[in-house]
Image (cartoon, rainbow, N blue to C red):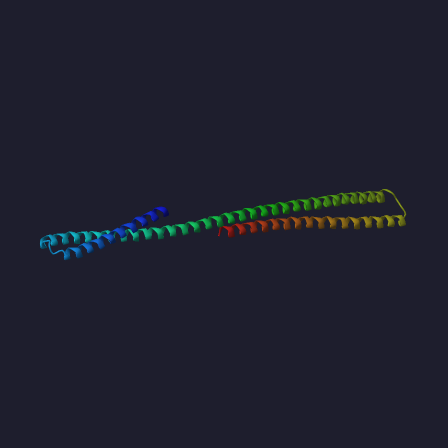
Length: 218
């Protein structure tokens, strides 16, 4: 496109030069014709008319060439504008690509964090469940001991002192049983709290991911 414009400019310059040369030649001819008195007035008038016609034609050609120059200049301005707009569009495309890459990286990081949180929650839940199972087993064993002692007290007649000792021992086992029950309830509360905290953490992660996507969409 630029080579075509350059060629057109060269052609235009040559045309203008030729027109100017013609104009100069016409003027020289007019001066020479005036000095030539041997020619008749009618021939002089006719030649003058012809030369005026040539002069008018030359002026028309010059005006046409000027219009072509103006048109070419406008085309050059449009080409510069299009080139600038193209560069801006390329920059916008590069910026969009970078935004998409950052969004993909952020999404991958959020998924990894959510997987880690779920894994940690599952591990803690397994640990608490194991502790609860162990506590329940101990509680069952203590209850069996209390039942056995109670049956022994009921089945065998013992002296009052031994009975008191047995009752004291039973009381101790009852206290142990109560402590075990409290421990079991505490573990159940811890499990419930752990589940609630884990769900809250997952909701927070999801909320952060949604917020991040909303910002990227803006």
